[in-house]
Image 1 (tube, rainbow, N blue to C red):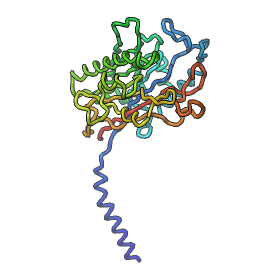
Image 2 (image 1 turned 135 degrees about the vertical axis):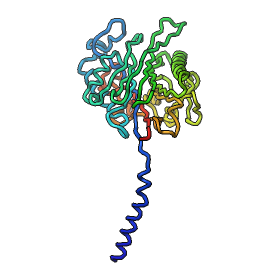
Image 3 (image 1 turned 90 degrees about the vertical axis):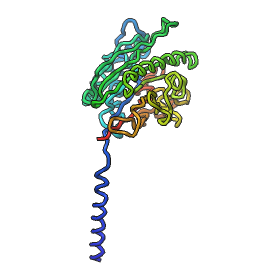
Image 4 (image 1 turned 60 degrees about the vertical axis):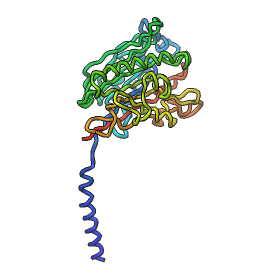
Length: 348
């Protein structure tokens, strides 16, 4: 028995010596998370002249009080802090936001206890939207440096009175690597999908024009498009006007890949309406973010953050995003959208 035990021990030692060089050669990767979240009417409680925000005041029909506002800030900050936590902690390095009233509410958000340690900065511009809602980008200052930013308005000559959210362009260094972001909130479907579709097609063409101008200057430019596009990945605004590809294989230099297409086809959505799921919240990546050469950051995976606590637990809207209001009835939830996010990876 002793001889058998000795031989067994020798075999184990030999196996370890054989495997050790293999394990030592395994590649290790740095992971970066980038997300987007429609915050569902993140207004402060003070009426601002010139915009339609009366509903979101203490005396408005939604009875929007400081207590409700502060609870929403806490809720949203806790959600953002957990996005991508299966691979990274502390929230995304970059987080696009929509439906924020002003810079002040974003400042309150990043100052909340759940996000304060992540040291977020803000890029925000007031837009001409009649409801007074804008898009913004928050970024971890330890991992992203803003080089330049500016808003781009969507102007439609035949509709001079039409006002909507600007598209936010941010150029910077993501862990030292150049990366450009365009944050969007395209026109809604409030007048019906078909009637309002030309507005989203116009927004898609504007966004693609901005991106193309970046890539003409440098074909290796990495560009990420994110936002609430108010269309699904299969709609014309995405497939034709913006011309995003549905597979990596079809994506060539100068093109964009929409990883949300596959998720949508699998039945995964970020919001629900009349028992159907939509995936309006999307993140789209340019060709230089694809490929197997991970010596610089490349796209790895796209996901919808649909953790169970973000969903309504019971009733007619069971499984839907647990929102702040249904109509003007207070629910005390988070948002009527789930956040979306992607991972970028880079070989160490």
